[in-house]
Structures are given as structure tokens and as C-alpha cells.
Length: 473
Image (cartoon, one colour):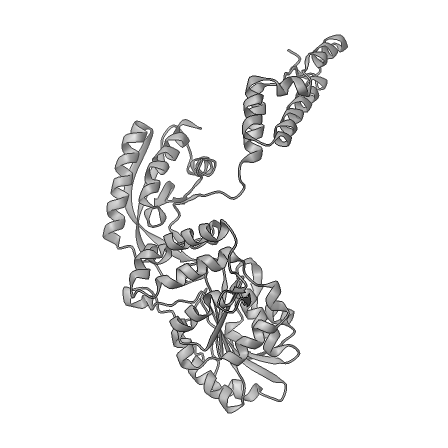
């Protein structure tokens, strides 16, 4: 009743319905609400009750008879306490998916975070000397041992590491960089912008595709602070192109008594080209080439938490540690705990290739992927019955995270084509609202699940999610 346009509820009936709405205290005594009060904060439950009563009151005033529904109170409370940051199943095949948090921490890193978060730690306390220490000490010796550098420190991400290096070593002076290396990273942050924020003055040399030694030499003057090398980790210039290698930049720097800073971007401690992946210079190679300061990420090819790592010559690193900006970009105890545990995995030869999830996913052999895809497809076919067509085909995974842009990782896809007019886009949307959410992609008008980034333990959850999507849940 009263649903047709123009219908108006009689005032006496409207007032009667309003009087029938229970008070907040009455709703709090409902059995369902009482159970909620035992489990959740009282303020959250009271707010949900008030919202439900307000909604019911508004509906009546708009000529839409309504009551305070018990299930709506429960729904609002459970929605209010549900975490905004939640685990998802990555079925996209993008290993370093920036939107999904990039690297998955290894088991020991997860355990280290749990230990560090459960009580006090010696974050800035030197247990040997019995006095205040430096948080850099947690990982400095490990980084130096792994890379061969004299000194090291960690900040909250690589952009911050570059900003700190430039602010410390080049504020108010000129920094020479190849025009072909003026990259833009995620979120529209560009090297010229970072340099401007640091107070350094950008001097571009060479052309987009070719930069020569003479270009650097011709730009050096009394205002020059350093030479900057930016590794093109998220794109490539191919064809008629040339860049000056870091070792030769170092030679030019020594000639003019100028330091060389190398921003490696994704950074790696393992040469993955021996496994068929595109070559990426390792941090150790940059140290051996003589670069004075090297910055790189902790959450990309290293496979650890988000961090910006800095290694290099002691004099420059110590100056960076003392810069006021260092405090603003420092990392917390949980990140340090995860980073330390991740770095320790690299001491045991090739064990890191198996223990660190990012490396393990990047190197999963196609035979294993096809076997996993076959298992998932068989379970889906049985679970979905005649409601969908399921098959396996080869596909391409991506490294992601701005790393190895030319890499094409051969993978296995489980493709699902629903019947009953359930479109691919709608299926993808329903999977996003699953608990846990499953993030998939479309491939040739079918839903595609790339098994490279799906753990074996997640397969039952994926099957259940696709069943619910078919039912419209």
C-alpha cells in the first residue's frame, strides 16, 4: 500500500506507525541485540540501533510503512566492525600487484612481525652498551654483508630514499641525470618532482634515447653536487638507444670528485636471468661498480615489506642518517622485523628462491602451474555442474610493481564461462564481494583465474566463491 505515485498515508495512520517504533532501550533488550552487546563494543551496537530506527522513521514519513527489523540491526553491526583492510585472493597472475599489497611476506617474516607486535622490543636500545641505540642497526649489518656495501639504512619506501639522498647531498645544487631516465613511478610521482622537493636543481643531459659520456662531462660545473643514475625498472627503451653504464659514471664522478647515486627502483639480490627472466642489475653489482649511494625497494624483487633501502659508502650514508628528513621517513618496528627476517633468508644460498613467496611465484615452472590449473578446473566443473563451462588454457602472467616490464611469464589459466546470462563483468563483481574477495580478470570474454598467484590452500575458497557467484550470493 501507498506505493503508487501520489499516494499519501493518512496522518493518523502515520502517527500510529511512528508510535509503534520501539525505543533504543527496548531494541537493546532484544535477544539478537543482547548477543551483539556481548561480542561488540556497546557504542557500535547503539549507533546501529539508532540508524535502523531513524531509517524506519524516515520511511514512514515518506509514506513507506516500515518497522525496525532485527536482521538489519545485526547486519549494520557486523558491517561496522568488519576490517577495511582484509585478505584477498589474487587470481590475476600479477605477482607484485601494487593494489593488492605487492609482496607476500615469507613465513619467518610473518612470525617476526607477530613477535615484534606482542610486546616491547629493543628497537632503539643497545642491549650491549645499555643505552640508546639506532634502529638502523637492526638491518644495517645484514645489508652490508649481503651487498658488500660499507654502510646501510632503511626508510619507508624507495621514493623516500631517493628524496633523502638528494636532500642530504644536493640541496641547492645541481644534479645531472640522463633525459631518458626521468621516469614516472606509480601515483604520478616523477623524478623531476622528487628532485624539486629535495631542493636540488635538475640538469638534463642527452636525449630521450641516447646519452653519452660527453653529455655528463659537458654539464659538470662548480654548482654540480652529484651524478644520478635511475634504472629504468618500469619501462624499456629499445632500438637506437644508449646509456652510460654505472661503472663509467663512477669513473666520470671520480674525475670530477662527484658522488654517483644509483636509484635501482625494484632492486634485487639475486640474478633472476639465470632462470630465464629478463636481466635486472643486482644491488651487489652496483656496489661493485663503485656507486656511492644505491637505493632500492624492499617490497618488490626483494620480496619483503614496503621499505626503501639505502646502501653505499659510509660517509654519505652517515650524513643521510643525521639529516632531519630521516626521522620523517623512518620505518617502524614491525617493518624492521619483517625486513630483517626476509634478508636472513638470502644467507642460505638459493633457499630464498623457495622460502620467499614473491620469488617462488615468479619461478613456478609451467608444468606445476598446469597441474594446479587442472586440479582447480576439475573441482570447479564438479562444483558448478551445468551452470558453467570450465577449461584450462595457457596465458601470460606479469611481474607487476613496475619491475621487469618486458617479462612475459608463461602461465596456466582456468577459464570459466557462466551460463544463465551471467556476464564476465558481473561475475568479477560478485567475486569482489565474496568473503574473502577473489580478484580475477577477463580473458576472451571469459572469467580467467591465473593460478600463478593462487596458493594451494586457497583453491577450496576459490571454488566456494565461484559457486556463490553462480547462485547470485
